[in-house]
Amino acid sequence: MNRTLAAALLAAGLCACADLPESASPAAGIVRSPFAPLDPGSYEQVSLHFKVFAYGGDNARAVSSQAEGFYTTIMTDTNLFSFMPSGLYEIVVYASHEEYVRKTGQPDWSGGVAYGNCICSYNGPQLLQTIAHEMTHLIFIEYMGRPRRDLLWLNEGLAVYEQAKAASGGRAPADLFAGVRPRLRSQPLTMDEILGFVPLGERAGADQKVALWYAECASLVQFMLERGGRIGFSQLLPALRDGKGFDEAIRSAYIGVWGDLAGLYRAWQAAL
Ligand SMILES: [Zn+2]
Image (tube, rainbow, N blue to C red; front, side, top):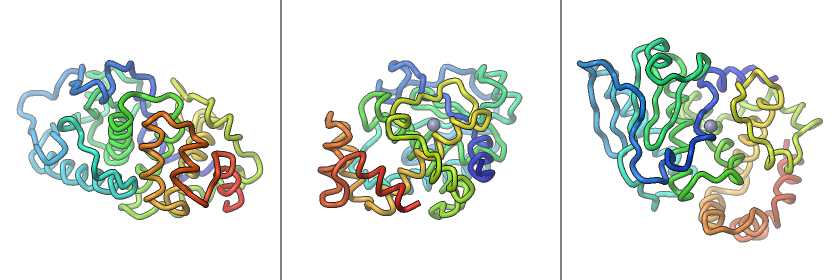
């Protein structure tokens, strides 16, 4: 398995947002974190899209600045500048893994969790990647109006892509899939497997199929963004939001490029 990818996923922890109830999704309006807050004396940094809670003013300002940078990158990649979130997204940065696990009740391997409009994580090497990954989910779900199981692969693929970008300083993650490319070439999951697989409750990296699923989703999204163009992607998202199926949405968004989902899958395989 690709060590870079596995390390990236493990470092950020597997997101725990896919199985949230609809009432705890950012599409339900402003939903605050249900978890215990930081201890007294923490800082609060408000910016255009975020309210960051962290220990130490410099820390809070640094996280806030990074988060705004990720937000801009996601908007640029998806061309969704017309999208306006219903409120500020909250980011809670616990001091340590110990405080994070104790106050959120998340499993020991978790690097962060999104709940409602809030992302919770902790000071550590996973922090920025976690924020980029979970922020993608919050924006995607709020844009779609509700959590969409049928779009899970697209949501996760985009989140891993943005996470990888955050890990590489904002550059397109050209080598992210180098290690897993032979497996993607020789034994990829079929599109039906991609659509039907729900990696709930699994730890990324602990299961080869989970890791392959994440890698393939992200590779497909990277291909769509970088080969199909960001304008096409920005037309695909509203088509899916408005209830079109994947085949019709792809046909209308990528006119003359891909005729349906199977066509996209074939083109992606040929380009690997
Ligand atoms: Zn995720």
